[in-house]
Image (tube, rainbow, N blue to C red):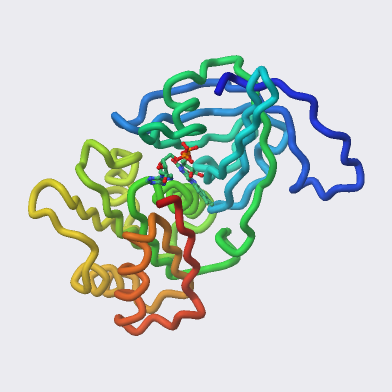
Length: 250
Ligand SMILES: Cc1cc2nc3c(=O)[nH]c(=O)nc-3n(C[C@H](O)[C@H](O)[C@H](O)COP(=O)(O)OP(=O)(O)OC[C@H]3O[C@@H](n4cnc5c(N)ncnc54)[C@H](O)[C@@H]3O)c2cc1C
């Protein structure tokens, strides 16, 4: 897949969210050995609620197109850009393009922001229980960034399950929040180093003890993470009606 330029079909009557918008790569930065931060300049930047995603569409020279969804990591900041955090998967068509090929000035298309129920803003309140596996932490990171701006007094806890510390996205930011924000607690679980612990009842109980009764729970990751996490959270007595789940990929 090469970088994309394409005509965007005229769709005046279509709601904005369904329309494709031209975007340009503004920067690409290495975040972990498997994840890159990609800043995209686009007219829809700044319209997102924390937790929402955009659809990305790439068009090859022969017209072949591929589209995938990516959570927006950034909160509106007036820069005209939004940040995606893309994990490069082996043989991944779109993530591979972002990871191996994308460079400043490349063009692609975006639509969105999408995902109203998996989103949060200050008036939605808390306490907030967040649980993310791997790149599933990205929308939760956006929620924590937004919370720090508009509602830092809302108690929040993030249970973050990742293979190793080196693979953890935004770990230094999350650890700084844990240290500096009195109402935020990070519970990091590394599955392939140290004690090799997955999310379990003990960490769910510890997170709930820190924040009190949650008003909202957001859970995001692969099925292998999200299914046991949802079961553990339900077993801890959290009513299913307040739990929002987003599942990525495999
Ligand atoms: C709402 C939503 C938000 C998302 N946000 C992000 C995000 O913030 N960051 C991010 O990196 N991804 C995110 N994803 C996943 C993303 O949309 C793609 O599925 C992912 O990048 C793989 O696409 P690809 O074209 O590279 O791989 P493909 O070419 O589609 O697949 C390549 C191979 O990898 C396998 N595979 C596909 N997805 C995964 C996966 N997640 N884990 C393990 N194996 C997989 C496939 O089965 C296949 O064998 C999100 C998905 C959704 C639905």
